[in-house]
Amino acid sequence: MRIDILTIFPEFFDSLELSLMGKAQESGALAIKAHNLRDWTHDRHRTVDDSPYGGGAGMVMRVDVWTRALTDVLNSSAIKGRRVVMIPTPSGRPLTQTLAENLATADQLIFACGRYEGIDARFAELVAQDSAVELCEFSLGDYVLNGGEAATLVAIEAVGRLVPDVVGNAESLVEESHGQSGLLEYPVYTRPLDFSGAQVPQVLLSGDHEAVARWRHLKSLERTAQVRADLLQPGGKAHDSLSVLDR
Ligand SMILES: Nc1cc(-c2ccc3cc[nH]c3c2)n[nH]1
Image (cartoon, rainbow, N blue to C red):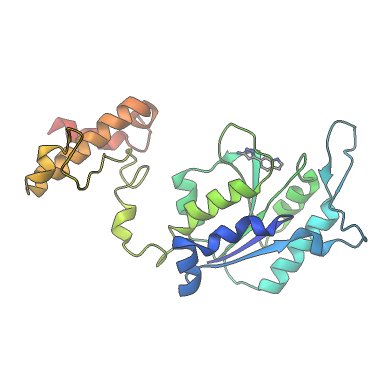
């Protein structure tokens, strides 16, 4: 998967050279490039924003700069297949595991990181009209950030780890929170066996793999019921997991 990021803070994404995302770039499973939006300005001050029509506080990012930048990235990366323009915004659709799984099948993601009061609305409108790309306006949750960069980092990690050959052991993607079961993760333990009197659950020391699997599933159900009962409602992703209680 090719990932392009348009931002006025390209150095914000230096952390993607580390850990799993860094290894995925070395292996070629992911190709990530951050571009400085100011490279597509034409004035001496490299201006990307202006005052809002209709008045109000703050500044709005210019549609001409954004459209020039996106057009250039799309034309120069020349990726065939499914291309999605990702715009982080508080008014977007929630970034869920289901959405991340869907996006992980794309050939290219292009992230448009806004700042100030956001990007001129005509930018997203023009992207939506372009049949060569999909538009995905997404939100991390109901809280407001100062810009799109942090949301983009989260989205790249959530989607990137689902791209084939990025995570070494695909098995580990199955049992995590919001994974295939839709349940929250069970508690995990490792050495020391006794820590300040706190013990490891005996079943995990039993060597009885079936009993361990059953205990883990029940702990996941318990945790999900405590913290995210909504996931267990009819239609929720974890609702089918309740059937294990009937056995
Ligand atoms: N979920 C969420 C996204 C944002 C966001 C996204 C882009 C910009 C640009 C300027 N402020 C922004 C805030 N806040 N919260």
